[in-house]
Length: 292
View (cartoon, rainbow, N blue to C red):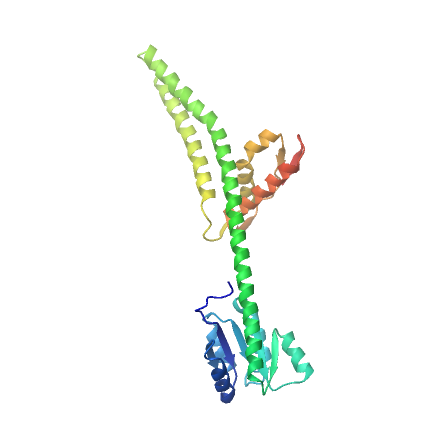
């Protein structure tokens, strides 16, 4: 689907000649939403509000700022970098036409123009633009789906690692509590230091369990905004997540990453590192080493 049938595309027309603006309006008003501006600087002011524009018609010879300069400025803005620009001008030399393309235009129509030719050019470039937008959207959706699938796979490995890591602390908690209970069962005079040591041990192991839960929860959440962190800590975290798999495959890993601050989406970077390490493990022979 290129466009919603009930949604008109929007065209920005910038020309300092009132007759041209009136002619374009009469020609296109039934098919498109039009924004007509007679001054290039006013056009830039209008674009600062980031309106949705599907195509731009530009005159070349205008006061204060010509169409070539205006097109260059517009194209610097990432929002409009892919918006098609058609020059509509009386300049018809080959050098003028080439200059228009060099400044980012997709087409060049000379005045006086044939109405049906202009309409056909506009329709073609809007269709191409909308088709590209749909393709970009589809690719973004597929990338997002792949990222979610990759993250779910990583979460599965993390869960496996967590269950493995929990065996020892749970066993320690069980043995400590069982030993304390046996002391009560067989000896009414339980040593106070023994009780305190047991409690300290249990608290320590529970703290470890809580830490692994926090790690799992933090990785599962989606990054809302960028944050600053030590890049080495991210590698350490990723390696810890995959430690169980390293053990099963007998792969050694040496982390020689130096500490330095970086600002980006932390969980997304962790996931990328995990994916790279997973791929490395898949192709490594037994008893091999991985360096990071």
